[in-house]
Length: 451
Image (cartoon, rainbow, N blue to C red; front, side, top):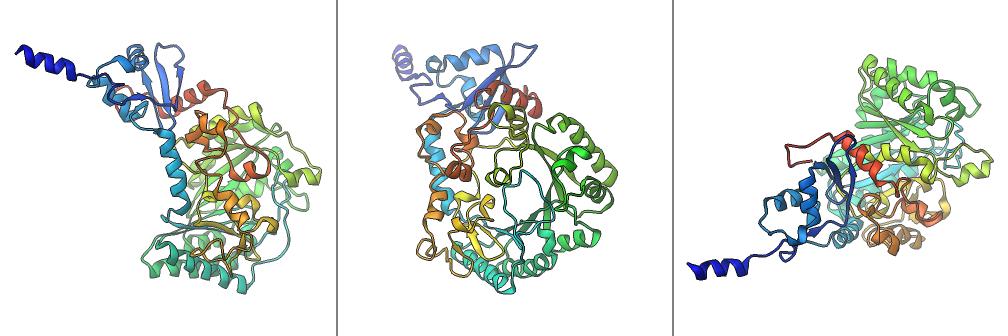
């Protein structure tokens, strides 16, 4: 009996000896008015409350027994782990480049626009996508589906203002839907529009074209919106857009984006409440979210300035935005890091970012010539393709690699990193407020191991 006890004693291990360690991607904050601590794990995408004894056990993790019941709870939420999370993010980043879950095309049937917004990052130009370029787009989609071995196609209609080219949207949609039907795949479409040209006929056409969601920007209430979201001739747009949202029966959900700057940040709560009431009145699926307005070379060249929200000035807005889309950590930022996602302008030029679709100078090829089966040899400017792909994890920036925010920001916007410099999240130095925002959104999870 004594020898058996001795054997058990010698084989017992601490959590540290068993390979467990505290996650490098935990951030925390004391919950106001309580003794509880909210801990968010950015790699696993969890946020939960912990008691004083639980936080103590986390602090002495190296010394507790590997079979202590708290180990399973901590591990399930990701606050401890037994692997290298950063190495895992880097693998995800490499995998994102070739991941064939879906082919994604951002299509601009025109770069023309009926609005003249001072902070717009685009230099608009007249002209519509020709029939020849439309044929090239369909042929490119087919090549990408065949080469990837994927049957699923995701389309984003963009511009310019895409509703200036409804006939092109309708014609191309039918052909692209047919491509996925031939492969028994799934077709999903969305649209980024200013909403001014929406009519019931247009909405129903978009529904037939399998558009499932739209993004429409409203910059505040009434005249505040009209100061920045104005027609090319200077006319107001608020009443028309909100009337469309109220009176039309929309067969798709609408994300209402509030581009927040110093001139309208005080109206965030009022606009969110207004959108909620508009949704109740109309029965349409409307969802408000806010995003800070940051610098734009095109806007600066126009000599037009709005009160930009950069750095700490945008932390409140950034926290609200990021808390609303909190998710599992990833190794890539956006479609710029995937070979299977491209943007196409009205002339057939290909881009890796929709913030660059108006800039042929940094196009990497054309819809007519580019073949993903041999992506570099068929690119007219391969460097314009590889420079975006190479901003994914592992990020060539030691400060980013060491940063606790890496699973959330993944090095920030690739386009901004390449052309403006690293774009750190506004609340980088205020993790407590971010955790409390997550805690308020997700709610207390005292009795459930799933946060």
